[in-house]
Length: 322
Image (cartoon, rainbow, N blue to C red; front, side, top):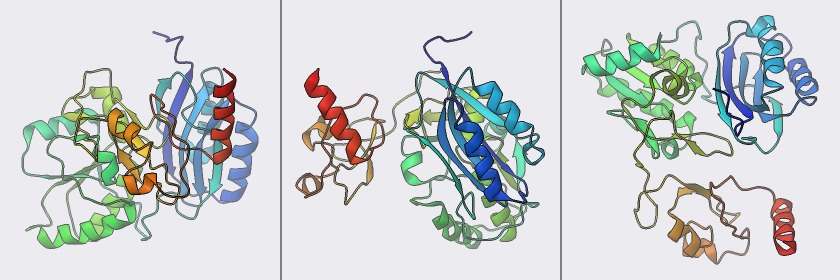
């Protein structure tokens, strides 16, 4: 059923396919999307594309048809959620040497076995003889993850190389099945190839990531919400009820609200309950609260990532007028 209160579609997609002139593709993307009601973050390189875009429902079919009509992106899976407003502040389309920063060359023909959400669920329910890895940063899995997953305490994807090497040393057999998942699937493409490069034989990755699992299977075996890199910050993976597993960094109270520290020289991402975030005026600590460069605090529900300084000056001016 069409929801009139959610006129925007949030698209998530990636595709590893050689692009002969990646910088020209960046130009073509900018030229096409600037004519539409679209915002987002798209990275393009010679190895492929990685995009997250919020676009008005009237323009979404036009963009999807144009995108999938390109020979480089034919057959690309596009995952779709609806939202009441733009999920991004602006449109950013950039060339990057790596569309995912692992800083290691891997053979993309040697990725893991893609498990459909149905088969992923079945494997979780019928087999205990496996390792399940959450291939996301720690601030992502703190608000949501699969039951029984290993949760590496890293802040960047580059650090996962160390985890993979330690895992290989600690695992008794390269035949040990390894399951892995991430938000949309792209990090698992590289990481599965990297683990195979280290000698692991049985690698399984969740096709389409957690987003696809939620769309197909709901919240079975999933705890909490899903962290996303846009204005929504955290979202439920389905319409099913979910428990709050995140904890306030200060008092430990249940919360799933993320904030960037208002101290611009810190900017750390942290979980906070309404009482603690108000007490520290948007900062992660009392020390940061007294720092010289602190953004003005204004409660938002739900919270959105911090903007440039002029955005807050305009918001304060509008607030004083009203």
